[in-house]
Length: 365
Image (cartoon, rainbow, N blue to C red; front, side, top):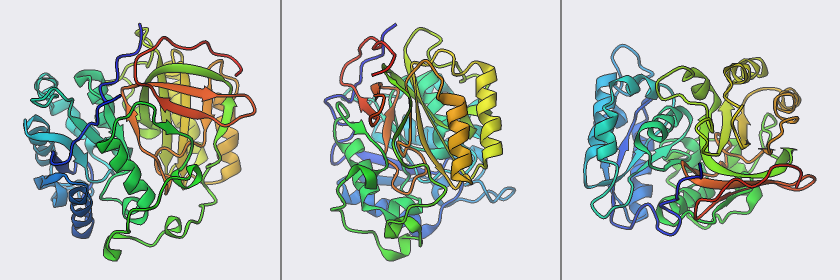
């Protein structure tokens, strides 16, 4: 099977004046971060509505943004509102997977397009991987794996805000990922957010955390085309055997997977990768893109682990493309056709394609 068409190849997901809904499917956020998020989206010309979950805290578990019922109702209400063009996750944390079993995916799929025919957009990363995977399995519209406006990295980095804005308000066809935004030379023209919305971080001063694997690197050379899938490694491993879980590429549609994580030491990463390996999750992939491993411990140990799992693959594998929790992480569309170019001795590039195409032959480039 060939990859599906990209509905955002020449048409932006959102237009100025569109309504977007901010919700918290996972952990709670602070008022100042919500205010900064609303301000940024409004500055982009979008109308913003805020769900009940945005500042809610569950009585039993303070790590959840309200009860499962509150968070699920917020998500469903936002997605099924015919006037809402995008549902924006305020932040990650934990809790999105808890919502899945109570969702009516038939109703969500029926509400997945705006009156003008555009697909609605879901945005977020980290714990929101659980929703991305479910949306790709059951709803069939592209989603945006992106830094979230309730997080410090969004407040700290003008490059991140400009990049997320471009993915939301400009067409996707031809967009490329070549590494973290500061390494890729993205523009920092947008003014900083209010100081109270930002937290002190190394990224604000341009410092590179010692535990980050940030240099774009080819682990296994080749070129491949396929639908982009994946996200946070911990969430993907946790979903093995769940209804939305499927082995990417097993249905004959070429697939390229993104994997990244945060705050997991090398031993834990080894265990998570082994889970995917033993489940057969890698077997049908056309290519693999490894993002950031922020705050995951010893750099040499992680690099050795990634080379052990991926350097001898017969498919192209690129590392260091910054996706995930890097302080300058780029966004990327999921559920759309992409091309991964990983030349031997060169720098890898991930490009979003405008139209579907059969997979390119693998092998050294």
